[in-house]
Length: 91
Image (cartoon, rainbow, N blue to C red; front, top):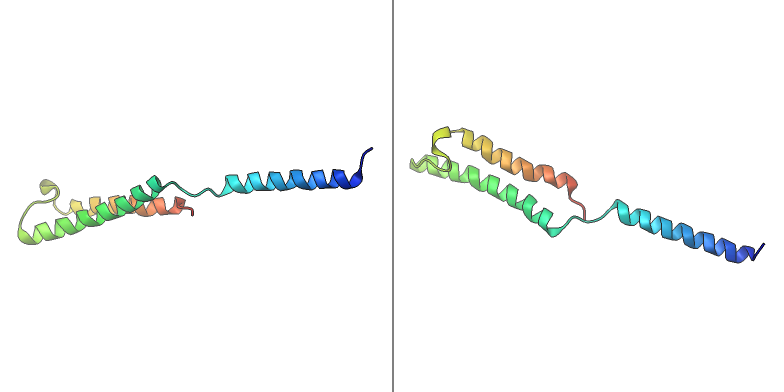
């Protein structure tokens, strides 16, 4: 039948390796590219809105001149895409 102590040790070793594989698959950190895109979208959205407000005060039609205040919605949409990506951020 074999040595019961060796069998118990082998079972514990197998369970430990299964647990390590399961934990390794559960929480893996995101790549630096994901973080760069996430923060980049938030910054671009903010810059879009700031550019629109400053250009509007000066009288220049930036970033897209023909759509007027819809530029604010575009800026918030870009920034929100970055904020939504934060839900997938894991360290």
